[in-house]
Length: 414
Image (tube, rainbow, N blue to C red; front, side, top):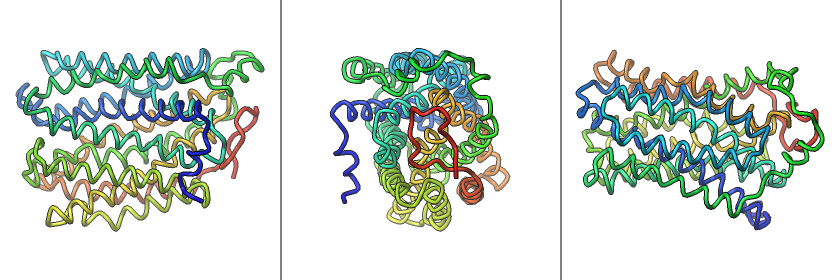
């Protein structure tokens, strides 16, 4: 059977829902990563050290749990579709406002607000998609949805390469308002989740504490798991453009920098689809563990390739593994989550993991400074350590592979 057979078996409406969720995460990531490409330029304009600008990444990540909880609860109460549209509009507007920052403090404040809006999108989009497709399609669709993140990274790299020399870093953030147009597509082509509608008819509305009764141990575990996941992805991506500029002296807007970033994101797309599909055969936890541990042997090529060809191969391979592990996340978290809080718990656990991992870029900068500015050592050490931690957490945790949605009492199981 073709690995893409699960996608071909989806109905026309299901494909629209998956596409909208994929595009939402892609454009969300596009807006987030624009800042990572212009850290040096922003630092020069405001006459501050790079570390001060990387604090904007920390604030965005730290704010995301607020958005996940706020918008997730709204999605559980009022539906996935309308709240997803509100999310997209809000993160697009805050991205636009960032372009008009007059001080670093204003920029940091807007990145915090952007993080609140960004925090709601992933959980709502993933729950809408997962509740709308057959169980046998979840692995492939999970990998596809999570591949929206590296696709957003790629689009940000493309925009930076083509536009930054002409419109500057502020112009890039104006371009970042384009995702708001996605709302028109969602409004015209994407229906509400049938699982959510059936649940509304069958149960009384309960508060978060009541809905989570008996599930707090699971929630804490998922937060820790997602902290490791976020340290894995942000540790391999956020400072990579800065590594190219400062360690390899490759200008951020050059064709070489774009080529390396493109290879990185192609690897991420391949990895997400491959390991997401693989998880249907070997299970969610085993797929995560395999991808995490296979990242370790790719580190020397990724950071110390010695030539553009080898560095490109390393960038490709590291992201096959990093985003391969991530490709399992949307289905794994949604399968583990009880019906009553599926709009809230996956996204909140994801974004709390972001909060716990929000220091990643700044910590890597500190480690590099301790080693005389050696960012390659900092990133290599970080990824190796986190890969082992992630594999261990996946091994110790539960799995609910193929659980039926819409049944009260569904959730974690071995």
